[in-house]
Length: 295
Image (cartoon, rainbow, N blue to C red; front, side, top):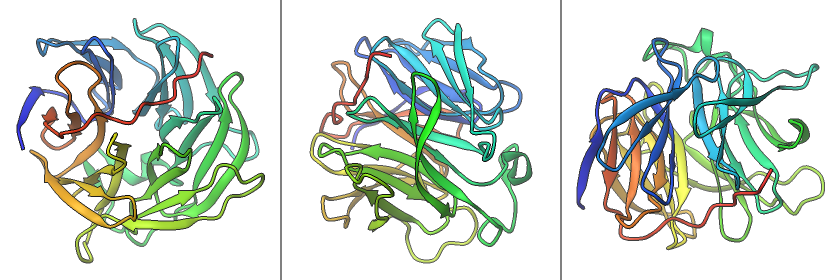
């Protein structure tokens, strides 16, 4: 499969957003940056905004505003493509966010977000993750949020062990990766209360030690789920039944997220934390059309 590094020198990149004109936005989580950066078609790099502390996953709305899960700042942040801060939202007073991680818009215009359930300040220093990461205590959540005011409408799940990447399929079902177990869970958003947690698949090889498991993910137009597997050095592809169909190697061991390109080049981009780069991979399908409500 054809591949190319589009940009080097990124510091702990995450959260890629691809625009139809070919521009790509990423977060940089490293303490020396904590920024949102833009890469153009020529690979030119520019820092455009500084939301707070350790920006993680991103989504984009119908007015081209970026929605950022700010893990270190423990906030949800809305920012313009020019870097202007529009709004920030704290979690509920009785249950504040611990680590807002990744997010996606639903067809209903609501925002779905993972909270990894542990404070990043006690979990990771730079790129060094605590040694007991497979046994320490987590209380990860999946939340439904009204983006008009930042209110949490529903807690869809809790007690998860580092919920991470999140995606929605073409039937409106929600998928969440749990990094510690390697599992991908599926939720029926049509449920009026708490949807059932359904095991869809698993993306890890064997019984890994250390912090290895699903990170950011996206659906292709082929109906398959493409999941960046942190610590495993690949994008694992699950078919419609949740079985592993393919593993696409990445240029580093710590891919953090994936997004399909929306311009004529096609393929997808993967953020690679340990290599500090944005890698393009020639996946032979387009991405599933994302919901982008006007808020």
